[in-house]
Length: 347
Ligand code: SF4
Image (tube, rainbow, N blue to C red; front, side, top):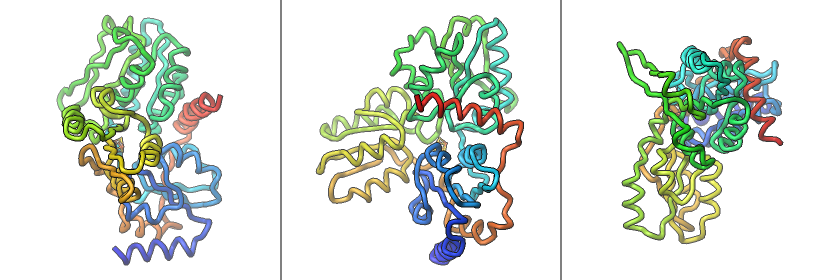
């Protein structure tokens, strides 16, 4: 590993400001050690156009590199060390199926506003942009859902049913006005079953996707910790099931979880329900001062696909590497959907 670390640092030194390496909070420490900027997916993408760098390496999963490619300047190139690192939740919403669902839902003349979590493909963001919708993050989901509810007759939220439910609970959207679209598999092909009679009076229609990593957090674990360590605090990411979120002491984005750990009093114990690389890093950062523990062992395999080895291999040939890009017919509406979010959140 030392050999790869050396290669990475040699290339960084040689390229100077021509290169920027960005790392998502869920990356392993070995990769994070070589990054210039750390953050969540949107924070990192927002940095892109302000960077001098010609080559920007995104250590994360594919949809994050795509978001960066949507927001990049013409003279910038976006790279990802392992393009097979996808997000299983993002893969649960395919653009053609999203378009088809919107057409079915709008067949009765209602205006349905799509709101997609940033964890979705560029093609999905493009469809959302075309149908007058926007994007949200776990940090601004409440603001964006409140906005979307005012733009039409109903909202289609995708792909994460848990973020949708937790946000709807916070905003007190009545349960009888919501529906999670039933899903199934026919001949190996995932299907949604949309019965017009069941959706016609719903104001909040939810795509049935989820993050397999955050689904592993269970209410029983929270209850066991409550019984054994009544003074410990428990905070979780809103990609967790609502039973876990409701039983926790707080929930929010990775930025919220990092701040919670920072502000926890000395001597306290905090259990954090999110991807384990971030929790392990916080535990090491505050060791000896407070105790930070993972609610469960829960590593995202796709985030783990970025290694020092493939980062070094990319950097050694970066001038010849094919950058990640998004076709213009997708980029324009996808950018529009992102810009709507930036505009709403800047008010
Ligand atoms: Fe996707 Fe979940 Fe992995 Fe994040 S942790 S990249 S949402 S599968």
